[in-house]
Each structure stands twice: as C-alpha cells, then as structure tokens.
Image 1 (tube, rainbow, N blue to C red):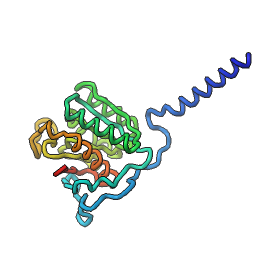
Image 2 (tube, helix red, strand yellow):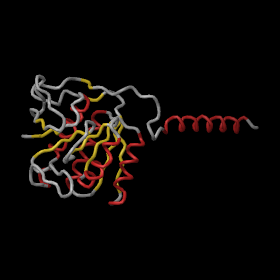
Image 3 (tube, one colour):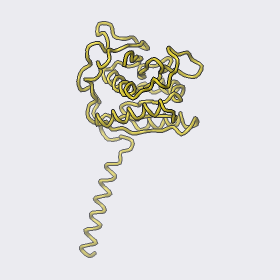
Length: 223
C-alpha cells in the first residue's frame, strides 16, 4: 500500500473509533449520580414540615434560583402538541438546558398513537430526568409512571391526578390540567403560559427533584 493510502486508511479508522465512542444515544456510558449544586433559598419549603406525598407546595418566588444540576445532567424532554403553551414550555426547557450545560435530548410524540411509544423511547434512553410538556401526555404518563418508580419525571404546566413518588409537577393558576374528565384547581388559560412563568417552572421543578422533594406539586403563585 502506498504511504498516502496507508495514512488515509489510518485516519479513517481513527475517525470511526471516535464516532463509535461518542454516539452513546442511549446514554449507556458510566455516569455519576446527579446532585444539586447550590442550595434552596428560604421559603421554598418549611424544613420543619416538608410536604407530604401528593401535597402542593407554594415556594417563595426565586427560592429555587440558587440550585443548579451537576455537570452532565441527562434530561429527556418529552413533548406532544404544537399549541402555543406547549411551544413556550419547550423553548423554556431548551433555554434552561443551554444555560445550565445540561445534556438534553428531545422526544416528540407524533400524534395520539405515538404518545405511549414516545414515553417508552424516553425511558429506554436512560436519562436522569424525563421532563414532560404538553397536556396530551398526562393520561399516558398516569398509566406508565407507576411501573417505573426508579425513573424521575417532571411535568411542567400540568399534573397527574395521583402521582407516585417519582413524579413531580409544576403548576400555576391557568395550568393545572390533570387528565381527561378530571377536575382541576383552576380553569385552563393558555395566556398564563408566559415565557417567564415557563422558565420558572423548569428551574423550580428541577430544584425540587435534585433535593429529593418529589411526588408533589410545586405551585407558582406570583411568578
């Protein structure tokens, strides 16, 4: 083999190895357990009386700002629907992930028949956290989440009616959908899904999850 061809072959083999090691679409490589960097501020919860499972906590606005995910936090963003509230939530999660250097991967449900398969796909990726955005996912999540108690879920802009300890939600007045045919604590209002409130929802929710305050509803009162 001529030297030039030998060099080209060597470079191609090296490139193939690099590509193979870096693919990791299932996040199968060893990964340290995620942790909170920073502390919750006063007023997030009452340390003397932490919220019970399925309870609602109303943290002081901004009390979550000091909490950040540790390096390499793996988040699967599960989304369904193209309505403005869902788009606003998705953008907020993507901007948060960029600012926090989170390893974010997106799973989009392509219509009603793809809702359950999309949840399965997100689970198979093995993320540290699955974030859900879109009311269409609530009923399927209520079906799936009790069977995957080791996987943490965060629902933004909606909630599950009877969440297990691995499902945390962030709601506010105008965003408390709990599933088809179920009552909600407030009337659905698409205009309530502002960029500021949506950004607060992902930060407050992740702060709760990283501090093991899970299985509850975080209610954003004055954001």
